[in-house]
Length: 367
Image (cartoon, rainbow, N blue to C red; front, side, top):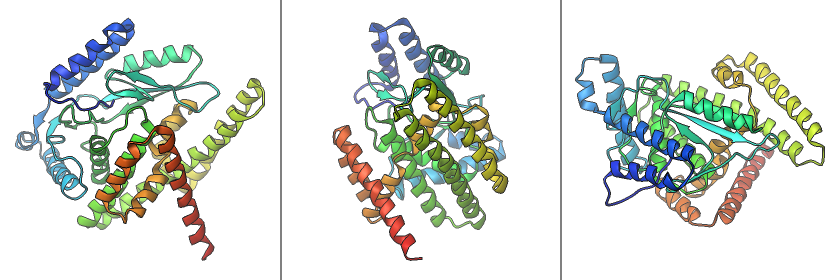
């Protein structure tokens, strides 16, 4: 649910302004903006300074928040991420997720639908603060023939419009996962390109990966290091399963087969993906953490949602390596890339990803 910076305006007025900008559109668009404004203001209204919460008597929460303060300082001092009031307050949401994102894609395409907003630009999802409203939107899109996926979101970035608080939806996660999330959301504040969700999310995911590694290096803990390595291994295994299915579906949808034949091949591909997951999980029980995702009956929209966050990671990893693993140099290179027209930007990233393949091949040939 990204938005860009506005200066010289009170931030509460900025949200109201976004809602009013929808006044020239359809009623459902007005309702969508207002639910977003109301949800955001409710979240902020309940935020309390972290020191106040730490002194509030919940020892377990206090310990977690004390660590969050250290992570927050590390993000700015060691990773060069924005130094502002974000993650200096705490909000108890009273629910599992901050909001719910709705993704949609045509029945025979992996290209996600886009929704465009006056300030945020075009993004590949719609965010709702109430699950029932997200489910209603999903049902509407499904009735039109789209594949649809609804995903609970533990946190999101307002890109500097507001000081984003720590949320109850993620504060009790394992330490490295909390760190990754904070690094990811602050990366959005550092750099955000309108109309390019894949670029934005893949960049932020790359920053969270680097941030986690550097946080662990600065705070040695064998147990946490082992846990982080295991989690990354599981993430990569899951991504590989999804990527295999996406590659096959890309071929199917681009073929000259009839729509009926494509639908049949699509069903077979998803069945094969589910079988691959069960087979790999049998040897790696930790993958069971993805059972919930598979239980939602993956479709084009759910594969597209994963791709948004991961497709360009290999390219960004190469750009970081070519920047000498120096984050300021990396950020500057990415800023230069962000200023290019999307077609040129995509071409640079595709070329970078190809260099990654060449490096892997060269290393492999030595063994």
